[in-house]
Length: 253
Ligand SMILES: [Zn+2]
Image (cartoon, rainbow, N blue to C red; front, top):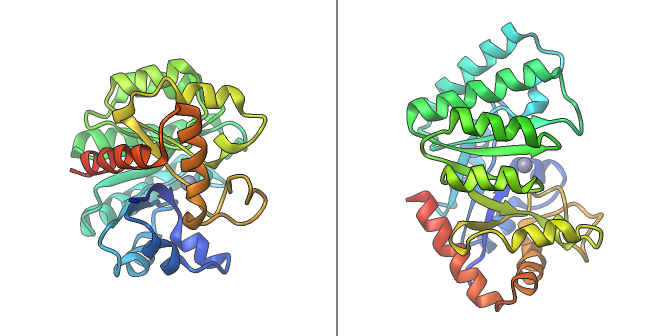
């Protein structure tokens, strides 16, 4: 069975004492996700033995913490020059996070919109982080695209966010939190995603699925999320894995 993990953090796995090599050799494909302007080189080293693992790069909303707009602008210059230097095809993860409320609303939006515009201008796809920021995420996607679309990662948004994202050519990726008992309304939204736009992910080392909940997560645990999604959708795990595999191939060209 082909297993895709559309969103994980190999470097943070390593920092938590987990083996990123074991996780990446287990996968048939996936994307190692960037968090900051200067984490690219290290992650290229970490993933270089795994040609089926792609790399994205971006500054997440946490990067606004204790930085002025001017600091952020300087960091963005470093990020964009690294993206070009290493020929990175995906911008991610970038977005808004009202749950942790990093920095200020203004600085989070500045950082997100700058990366949306860059993705649009350079024909790259974006991987969006949206935590409790549905309304602005929806508006920003509406206004800034980008033309290539991308992925809404760890989807937990409203149907309005899903609708605009699907209209703009995005894939919708669900994480291990669909296995959590309390998230029945999240599981319901899964049924609305067209089969050819669905992805699954771990967001490892975060958000371990039941029955591993509470432990540091690894891509090795993603089968629990596949099983849960296949039950919700009423299709076999094999069939689900085939369609996610083909979505991933289409997404990556
Ligand atoms: Zn992530």
